[in-house]
Length: 319
Image (cartoon, rainbow, N blue to C red):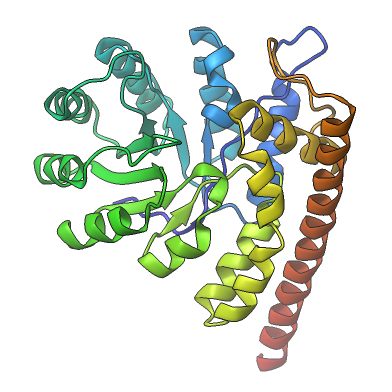
């Protein structure tokens, strides 16, 4: 049974000048994530600009993700659609190409009663054998009631995860874990801004982007090692960046790409149009936050490498 622990980033979509998908640099990004502590990789999600992609591009993104991961870490494929039929079709494709897990949001165009949402996921879980993750993406609200998750977990052995992207997720996180006796794992999304709350409440994994991966990995390792205050102090340095970026989805994705480009992970921060435009003052603020975030990520990267080297040296001395 698949279990997730740690940082499981969503890949962004690198684009060429003509806005076509740059598969080579998507592959480089996947390697970067796996080589720098990702416990799994995911896409094409909101951070991948899936809402601006054709179905063919989403399928191809999934193929590249599975192929490049090469079974080094689990691969989570986002297969959401407002149609149960289309979601199942994409999900079956993901299973055929050896994805490890599906990440699916409820239909977005129509507000449905809980019974219909349960039916949507129930049909999906019955159609595939790999694990399903319900992405509870209600960026300004409380999302679905906990009863939905508990009901589905009781009905389907492969309904194993939820990704919470809601306001104040802590109480729901704890309730889902308790009422499913820990069988369901909770993943925190929304840029990981509530990561410390998630660690306290029992969340098992966190799903930001990969641009600042080392900050999240080091925070996670410090907290899990019992160095709670050190983890809090480190993560507090990332909060100004996240608070600014999460004002708007396109801003968050754009800043993620700027950090990646600055760090040499992808060649450019190009977004698909239409997207947000900023005045001079806005650009200055964005660049300031990006500069600070890049410096923090590189600092954490050095700390992680030093820790790994110290561990290797200690192991060598014991031989």
